[in-house]
Image (cartoon, rainbow, N blue to C red; front, side, top):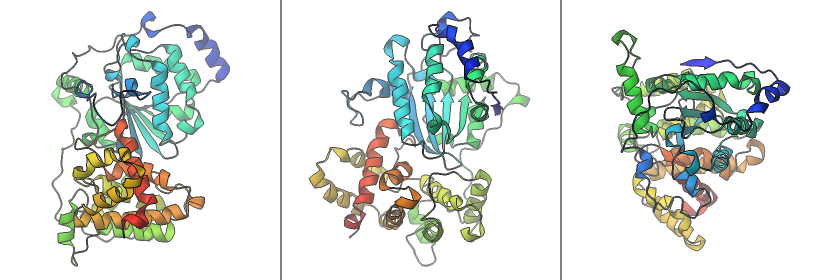
Length: 430
């Protein structure tokens, strides 16, 4: 994985250099060709899109954009940052895509997360002469994203970069700030992404996986990139990635609340309620892994002895995200996705019924978490974490689909359910 440092030359130079390109499209340029394009796989997720899905109705203003699944949200990365994925191979030909609406759709997605640290992953393979946007559109798109979008993006990972994308970045150096340029990283193989995010939580298009396999096959054995094992053997006292029922069985007193939840929430209740942006910041990934290893080894962890208060917040989110099954369970997935279709008069009783149908361990843990988050929200004038903001942070960590990834059309309903749960927690848990 490599990082590009892009030097800022100033707006005047940028205007002078890119001005003549305003009406020029990439097809008119003699760009270096991308590596050979694979035939579209029948297993590509976009081919399995259900037009009758309740997530985004056909008459929704962005239905024609969302149906291609170009943009996805994939939970948190290894640093505790939200992950936004852009799939170039799912972009249809120019005449089938409104690029302005695509830009607005991307902005609408990022608007939910720009107040928090986040990561952007761009799968470049599949960008062809038929679906490449114009240079002027790319320039205007970069300028459209002002400081509020660029401030908290911690990294942009370009997967399977080609000579085209590298040439493009060189051309855009005059308008890309040095600070933003340092956030750009090239990722040559999917296995390198494991340092950033668990690939199993991403819906990686079949075309991209097949292309990655071809790249690997073309390498000499000595040059093969290291492949992380899919699943490491669990430690005897494993805590992360273990079902709640098993954690309860291991607990000396049969406590339904996992020790990680008790430790993090106890610490944050004492020292984190008045921290502005709590749950929005990331933490040092090395420290996160060290804390996880200590828990998995059966050691006691005292967050009071650690300097970074955000570390406990990241550990809490990581624990929830690494559960084998989401806290709200797969069984409730469809009910929660369709919750907003229920009349407001019936939502409270339905929510109470759904929550009470959870397994005992899930119910106890959810109640413990939501009661704490209500305390966080009660201090929102200081910490800026309202119920809506907390729902955006925790929604994707409380529920996801069986494929581990999170489609944008499902994000809204899940966050809405989480916000309503926070609003009504005093009624739901009585």
